[in-house]
Length: 284
Image (cartoon, rainbow, N blue to C red):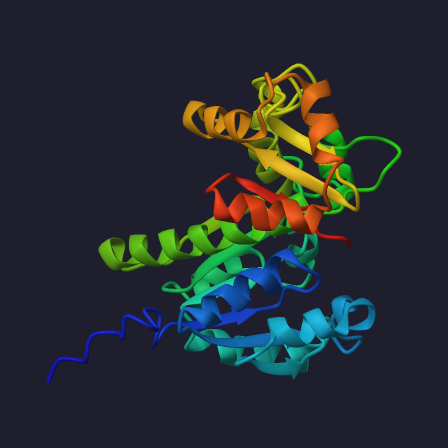
């Protein structure tokens, strides 16, 4: 009898994932795969996942539906426990520098020889041959111009976009295995993910003189009587409707003078009633 097709609500049912990744990108990717139906086992070091200590609520969200176990991969018994998990696994997610994995006896050549059908997504900071270079979300963003010094980033662009890339690379590896019968290693460099996210800056869309950076008055953030509003009337039909309803010519000064007459919440209600892309800016 042929196995039943996977549920559309859980397309990865039957796929077994093992993750040794801590902090953010790897655990975010593992959480997404679990949400898609994969069976995920998270292997943490004896010291735990640092994320649990600094943002426990988020950590708790990310391990929902997963099996969490502790194993010291620097110890022979810990590596044996991991090896037993990998024997029946389809995908391994790591977020450890390549040299460190080699020292643990978990380099790709060793893994592939022992588990030829196992796929790996290796989350690293920089693409090879710089994959052992130290870094974090902040340094990756700094290198590609997505920061406004001295402010720290509010969104972890490298970690969040890198996690989504790890999911897609994991799925690509599984699809490739369907045709070849053997596992492959896919590398996700967080710095490369930021480079992709920085494309709007490189192409002038979000620079101060760009259409999404301040050059278009109908696309911007304005002070209200209380709070701020974000206006995104970029398309001609939205811009025409906005300016017509407000009875202004469309200069930034005119819009500033109008928006300060009501609260952000009132403007949001007005915008919804008139099908205008405008919302109150949420407070942190």
